[in-house]
Length: 188
Image (cartoon, rainbow, N blue to C red; front, side, top):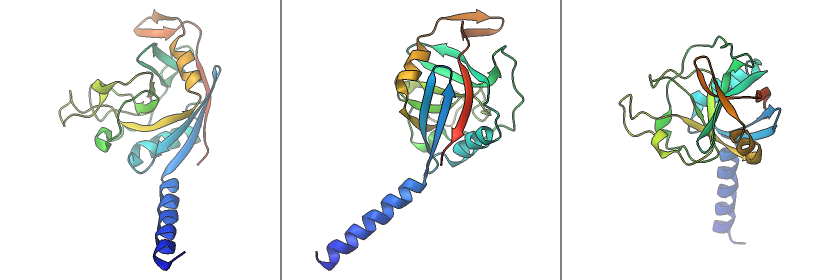
């Protein structure tokens, strides 16, 4: 192998090593099975750090996917099984302009109408939801920040998406049988 080829090969290995370091792995352990995630620290650093912080302090333990809409998304990370809302940390800046799209199997931050109001709640897209992507800086066009993707357990996500739902007080699309997030493990 000539000197130039060796240098190119060495550079390729170095770059692939840097890319691998910009990824955090996580597992969402539910009563329906495990969902494995790859979180994109490089393109959504604040959002990934926020999710990891909540996971590592046990915040997500015994919360639920409280909003499930088949063909759209499953949302969780903020309520207990009796729909009591958990106290959260300060809201984070919206990183929806990072180039990641709300496609099937991606995980994104849930928020209110204020683009910079995301705290702990997240959702996993069951379909390509382009209307949730960042378009502009207006409140209507800001979008929802994608910060990773499902790399294992998409069958679990789809099964959760098919559960029977009902309305409970102010909440809509609540699973009849709670879909419990037992724990979120950060694997790094």
